[in-house]
Image 1: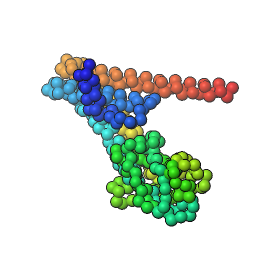
Image 2: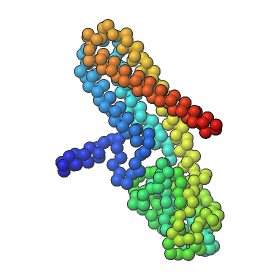
Image 3: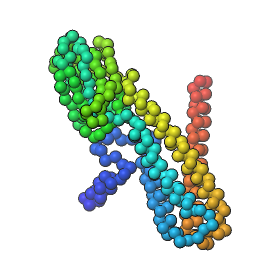
Image 4: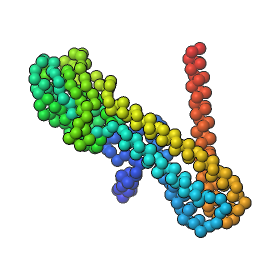
Length: 298
């Protein structure tokens, strides 16, 4: 049992599509299907590579080998390319700095007192306190995310547990940095008295209005979405071309390259089955939503 547990733990750490973080937020709904789909895609690529090696010297009058190779390129490499585009354009930072401009009591901003600064990642999930290192230097409050850069979607200030409300910041500037040296302003806030609670150890409402990281993230998402659409269109066109090549090679490649032909036929059949089933489910979902909306109105 211990050996099986050790093997399972090692497999979990080596899984490129898993999340080895102990306190990571577990995906729910359709999001949890994404790693499974990527694993299936990786297995399909491995099978395609095996077929290409086994049938390397087999003759076929249609470019089925090229079709398998193109399918491998349009699979995980295309997904990695889209991910790299989004990651490069997404404004993710590891270091954040809050600079107090004024305090509630009118004192020198260097006397600011805070309990902590709570950051939220790209999924609007609070970054674990254990993954953040926080410190104060006068009017500056520094936060370093130990696990690496994160896209900031919103943040909260938590008032000090013991010091009085007069030392609460009510006006500040939030900056972000990749290396902790060069800083970029991402948010300026003039908080109302109600937004910063008088009670001790309490968080403020989340601040996200006019957050520059969100504006830049929208542009990154649009670029990634465009790349994903182009990749999907190319994949669909490649699937259609492969289906025609498989059909035209029925009378020749079945005998000269049986492993190649039957493998291509099986993969095309599975792809069209999944595509058709997904389309049918989308249509049924749209009809169900429309019928449900009409029933609620009635």
